[in-house]
Image 1 (cartoon, each protein chain N blue to C red):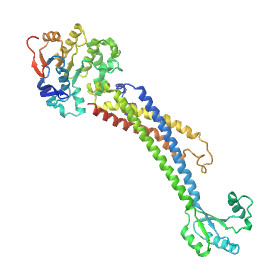
Image 2 (cartoon, chains in turn yellow, cyan; image 1 turned 90 degrees about the horizontal axis):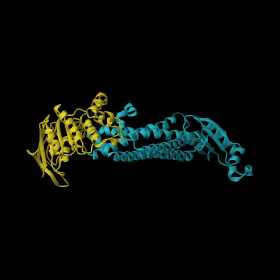
Image 3 (spheres, helix red, strand yellow; image 1 turned 90 degrees about the vertical axis):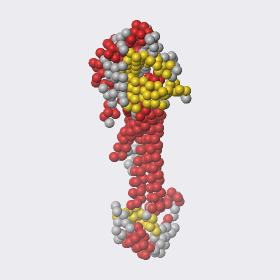
Image 4 (tube, chains in turn yellow, blue; image 1 turned 180 degrees about the horizontal axis):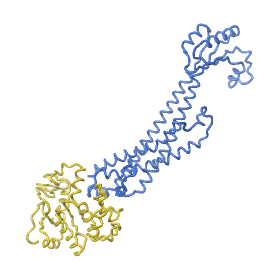
Length: 224
Length: 294
């Protein structure tokens, strides 16, 4: 699905990581951990062509990300659901409209009706459909972001600290939603500091845990 | 075009309304459309009135006979004979002494003893539609009416036509500048709106929106605003033109400002032209901005 081959990236001449390789196979479940500033978010952004590698190759659904034009990047984004750390909603639209956005922008607004209601109930936001993003709690916003990421039925879901702003109970609920999606065949990549969540997930799903530290990507040890 | 007018309500809502740029765009389009209507009215009226004047001057000429009391009658008869036998001349008339006095009155006053002065005889010539051969007539007059001078009003008509052409050129230049100003103002307003919506663009891209989709939301909005503002400005401009004092249809420039017949198409085209300018200005600004905002 998504492959990073000997990828290097840095900011203002300072290498964040180099010669980094990663393959997200179809239906796989990956956790990405590491200290703050290690480059987790950067690595995720490389996976959906929001950033381009300085060296090496990123292949998204078999296509070289560096060779994609902006329309092709947009098309690839329709197959990748992204849950941002800060959620990023359009504040002037209701939660229902925000969640339906991927269908709206891809000309499939007519599919919104049934899908949206089902999805809102799935993430437990049926009663908040017409509320504005600012009126929702952190956990509700995270669930709304997850609903927006999956409404278009993407092949890959990339989540950056999806449980960063929520309590334990809510993080378990979000995790169970992601595991459910994985069982439906979706490829999942989650960047998180939340080791407790990773431990909880490993009992339900065969997840690969990667640790990004000092510019290197390593398979995490048995401590998890 | 229908897509531009009716649009996609869902897609339109993805970009928030920005009150100030919206109002500014409508206001600028209205003011520019108003100025364009006035510039058009002045330009077209000047053109029309100058055309009437030029036509009147082109169809008339004056023959001046030498002020020779001895041969005056003979010269007049010869001149009338030449003129009446010239193809293209519809009417020939020797001015009476009273008419000649009236012509001189503004300069010499009403008490001029005309009969005591050697006055040249003036003959008014009116051409028919196709006119006459001026050079041929001059040659015949030289041969048969020595000293006669034919004034075909070229010296008056040409500067008038030149001035009218200049005014017309200035009018169109003003209209082009107004169009360019509308384009520049819309570009600035669109850039401001795009800059204010960086976060919106970022979210739309995150969920897979193509540049054309994002641009369309801005383009449609600014095109409709410019069109609406221009309609308002055009209506006000037309009302102002209609309220201008009207006099004789063809004589005075100041009392003839307005539109006649097919000229009414021009002000009606202004909103469409403003919308077209806004469409291309916003589209260019949007794609440029989206290209910069990777």
